[in-house]
Each structure stands twice: as structure tokens, then as C-alpha cells.
Image (tube, rainbow, N blue to C red; front, side, top):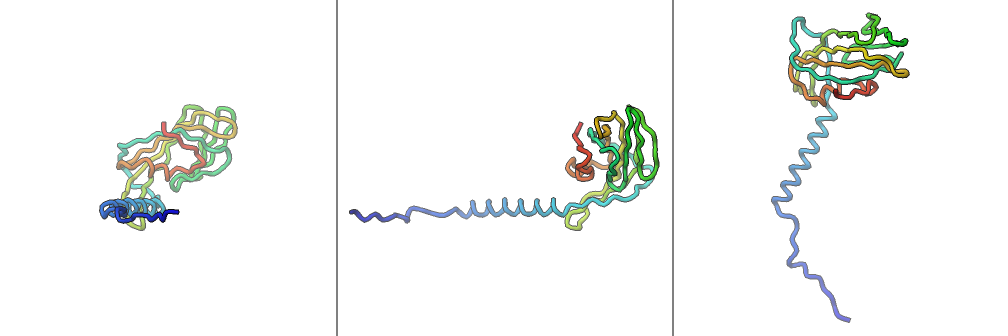
Length: 166
């Protein structure tokens, strides 16, 4: 039987440039994951007279009889046929299909790892579109005083609202 030996003289590991590139990619991934995990949004009362030039619109559904919190506004809806009672922060209002409810303006401070990245005022408007089963359907408009990335706005909206960009 012949003795077979492996020639390793021609093999090389990764080049220094490849190792540096992979290290940079790994660092970016770690920093991105850290930023997403430490992203927080603090919601406070807003100053009067703020303008809201930036708008994002969603189709949302609110579960009938279950409280939802958007920012620091508490919303509870009770629907009956084409009418709805909307309780926002303790103020009740009867809505019919097509009617809108404007929530009080708020101020949001977005931080990552405790460092403030962005501050903006925002106002939410809900337009009642009717009920389906045990959910009330709305068009929701989020207006902001500064342009805010959509992924930050979506963090403000609870998952129970099933928000879909419109």
C-alpha cells in the first residue's frame, strides 16, 4: 500500500483583510443588536402650539373591551353596530363610522443605552371605520414635529392593534 501524505505547504488561512472585514461586520451586528435591545421611548406631555409636518398612516384594529396604551394614552373601545364609545384617558366620546378622534399631543424622547438620540412631539388621530367581529377598525394617523424612522413609530404602537401601514 502506498503512503499518502497531505501537502499543506500550499494552504493558507484567511487573509488579514478578510479577517478585518469579518471583524467589522461582526462588530456592526453586535452594536445593532445592542441598540435595538436598549431602544426606549419615553412619552411625556407636549408643549402647546407645536406643528406636525410629518405624517404616517396605518390601518389598525382595537380589541373591543380591552384597554390599549399608545404612548401614555389609554384607550378603551366598546362597539355596537355602527357606533362606538371611545374612552381615551377617561374622556368618553360616541363615534359613528367616518368620525375622527384626535388624541392630545405628546412629546417622545428616544434613547439608546441611555443616550438621547431623538426628541419629537407627536399627535395621533383615529378615524373610526366600523367594527368586524370583536374589533373596532380605524385609520390612524401619526403626525410628528420631526421626521422619525418608521421602525421607531412602530415601537410606539402596541402589537395588539395589528397596525398595517396604509
